[in-house]
Length: 523
Image (tube, rainbow, N blue to C red; front, side, top):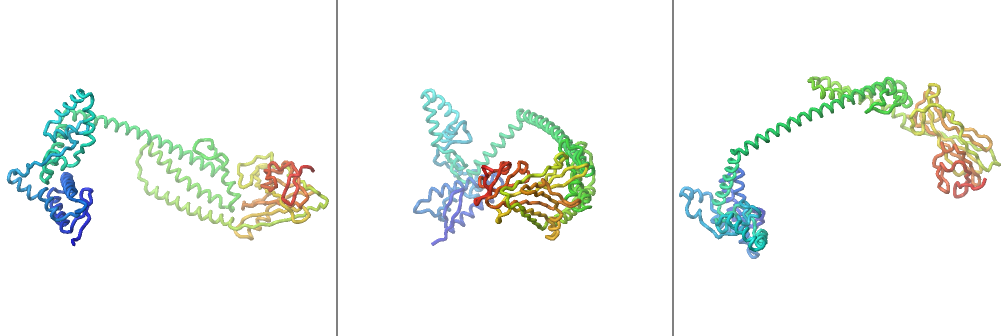
């Protein structure tokens, strides 16, 4: 039993015996060496392989579908070898090279007006396709359009001659290697001659001049537009770099940007040095601002430089300056990261202190919660709202205050209790606890009335370390509280049975029942 292979010839899969495969492969290699690797040679080989695949397909059946060496020899004998048609050329084209075979009807794509039907019929009957087109036109009128239907049927039914072998078969010529080569070379020659005639014609010369002229005009217009766009973009870069540097310098040195109303700049109230002094250690602000100014200023200088170069188109050789600026920028970035890391350590740990006080009023059935007068209401407030912190300007001095948060919960005893929890951060838990002790907050308890201050304060020159004050009023079961109208400034998410929003809880009595804080209808 012979060994078989699976091969692909012109897109068709075949099974072939080993000895047949060796003969076929040797034959195809011989043809490729003869016709060469150029495009014309590749096209000839492709058409030869298509014809070989057609021959093999006609021979394969369900009972016999493996290509044998006899089939390959028969294909080689039919198609011919390079040695065969070399001898034919020496003998001045023998009769064998002109051998005719049975014609087959195809549509001719090379001589078509619509579908190539008349071209194919002309090749089949050896007639001029023009005569057949005239006959179809006459029949169209004589048959009241029936000829058009016949033409459409032929267009659909008759296959198109796709490759050279089919075009040869359409003219009754044997699809041998010699004829395929001759047909392709004639087609290539015809195309070259047509192109040569077109290139030498007056139409081509005039068209080439017109196209060249139009191309020059389009190129010049595009060149001018590109220059205009470059200048416009350069002007935008100059404006951005100039005003950016001006805003940066004014914000860092003066403390507030006096060009804030101009475009491409930041918000008006940027008191950078004063603002940062509330967060970082003394002496760090100035150095950090210098580094931040370098990190921001160098890119703005680069933008300004690029913009002026695009507008004025001057030449410069300043590689050393550019590399030095990049080096300074990266060093500043690294130093600023290190400094920022040392300051972030102040927020590493968190601690808290809680103070509790019992309301000494055994006969009190309700506790009245009120808010003290806001002494800073008439003073200017800076737009520095950071987690319920505000900054007021009092007699030219900035006062840093925070808003406490008040909650009401169930008491496990029979007394009203007031818990005040102070929280803060620090480099360690001990430092965080010391920061908690430095928070100043007051409330005034008189009989059944508690008046809470609207703000808590930090000691002078103390830094912001996320200080917070939480007030918890514990109400025993069966007793009530009254929230005055101004208490909505400090109350936050007080749980109640009716899920009433905190803004709607003020101005009402609320009684503590087993199920929770409940609105009291009557006092």
